[in-house]
Amino acid sequence: SMSTHPAALFGIDDLLTDEEREIRQAVRRLCDREVRPHVAEWFEQGQIPARDLARQLGELGVLGMHLDGYGCAGLGAVSYGLACLELEAADSGLRSLVSVQGSLAMYAIWAYGSEEQKREWLPAMAAGERIGCFGLTEPDFGSDPAGMRSRAKRDGNDWVLDGTKMWITNGSVADVAVVWARTDDGIRGFLVPAGTPGFTARDIPHKLSLRASVTSELVLDGVRLPADALLPGATGLAGPMGCLNEARFGIIFGAMGAALDCLETALAYAREREVFARPLASYQLTQEKLADMALELGKGLLLAVHLGRRKEAGTLTPEQVSAGKLNNTREAIQVARTCRTILGASGVTLEYPVMRHANNLESVLTYEGTAEIHTLVVGRALTGIAAFRHG
Ligand code: TGC
Ligand code: FAD
Image (cartoon, rainbow, N blue to C red; front, side):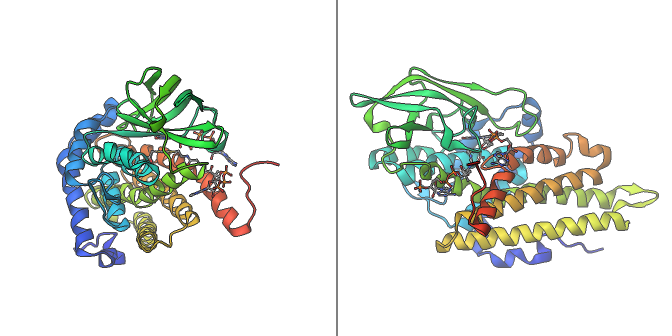
C-alpha cells in the first residue's frame, strides 16, 4: 500500500525553491557516496578522515556556504540549513565538522577579521584545504564562558597567550585555532596557527557520543603571536556569541536530519518486521509512536524553515535561535530513542544508524549551549529576568 514520507505529510518541500532542493540533493549525494558506507566504522573506531572530507565538502561549496566573498558561495540561510540537515542525517560528527569550519572559525574571521586575515584564511578554508577550530570552552567554564581564565597579555607589539581550552572540535586536525582570551580590553579573539611554539592539541579519548568527530584539549603555554593575530572587529563576549548564533542556527536543521534518518529507518523496519504474525507497523501502539514522531518532525522542520526565512530577512533574534535549538535537539533525541525501541535488540547495534544518532545527539543537546542554558535564554526573554547566575 501507499506510504507518505514524514516530511511530505507537511508539504515541507513546497516551502523550498528549486535551488534549495538541488543543494539539498547534492549534499545528500555526497553523503550517500562518501559517508554512509563508512560512517559506522568511523564511529566504532572513533575517527574520521577529516581532511579528505573537508576537501570534498569544499569542492561542493558547503564550507562557509552562507558567507559572501573570499571564495564562499553566498547562499541563503535555508540552503545552509538544508545542507546541515543532510550532513547530520549521515552523522552529527560530519555536521559538526562543517559547523565548526563554516559557522564558527570562518564566520569569526569573516565577521571580525582584517582584510589580510580574510584573504589569508577564507578562500583556503572554503576550499577545505585548511581546517579551523574554535576555542571558547575551558575545563572550568563551559556554560559560563564569561568566566574564562585564558589570558592574552601585550609584550611590545606581540601578544602572549596562556590558558587551556577543552572539548574543541577539530582541535588536533586544525591548521588554525580561533582562540578567545581575556585581555585588558575584555575578551578578544586570536588566530593561532598550528605549530606555533607553546601551542599543543591533545585528543580527548573514550567518548561514547560524536565518535566520528575529533574533540581535543588545547594548551596555550606562553604562545607568542604577532600583533596581527588579533581579530580587530570583536570585543567582549558578544564576539564569540555572534559566532554561536550561526552554528546554533545550523543545528536547528541538523538535529531534524538525524531524527529523520532515525524515523525513516524505524518506518522501514516496522513495515518489514513481523511480530505476533503481523507487521510491527500494523499495531496501534507502533502507529502512535510513528505518528507522534512525524508530528514532531514536521513541526521542527516548519520551525527551522521559518527561522531560516527570518535569518534571510535579517529579522532572526538570538532568542529565536535558542528556542529553535532547544526544541529541535530535545525532540530529535526523543525521536531517536523512540525509534530505537521500534528496532528492538537490532536497535542497539551499529548495523542501524539509530543508536549512533541517539548517542551523537547527547553531545548536540549539550554543545552550542546546553538545553538548560537555552531554556534560561527563553525564560529571560519571557520574564525580563536573567536567571543564569546568583546575585
Ligand atoms: P550576557 O550578559 O547575556 O551577554 C554578554 C554579551 O554578549 C552578548 N550576547 C550575544 N550576542 C549575540 N548573540 C547572542 N546569542 C548573545 N548572547 C549574549 C550580549 O549582548 C552582551 O553584549 P555586550 O556588548 O553588551 O557585552 O552574558 P552572560 O555572561 O550572562 O551569558 C549568557 C549565556 C549564559 C546565555 C551565554 O554565556 C551562553 O550562551 N552560554 C553558553 C555557552 C556556549 O554556547 N558555548 C558553546 C561553545 S562552542 C561549541 O559548543 C561548538 S560545538 C561544535 C559544533 O557546533 O558542532
Ligand atoms: P557545564 O557548564 O559545567 O554544565 C553542567 C550542567 O549544568 C549542564 O546540564 C548545564 O546545563 C547545567 N547548568 C549550567 N549552568 C546552569 C544554570 N545557570 N542553571 C541551571 N543549570 C545549569 N566548545 C567549544 O568552545 N568549541 C568546540 O568546538 C566544542 N566542541 C564540542 C564538542 C563536543 C563533542 C562536546 C561534548 C562539547 C563541545 N564544546 C565545544 C563544549 C560545549 O560547548 C560545552 O560542553 C557546553 O557549553 C557545556 O559546558 P560544560 O560541558 O562545561 O558543562
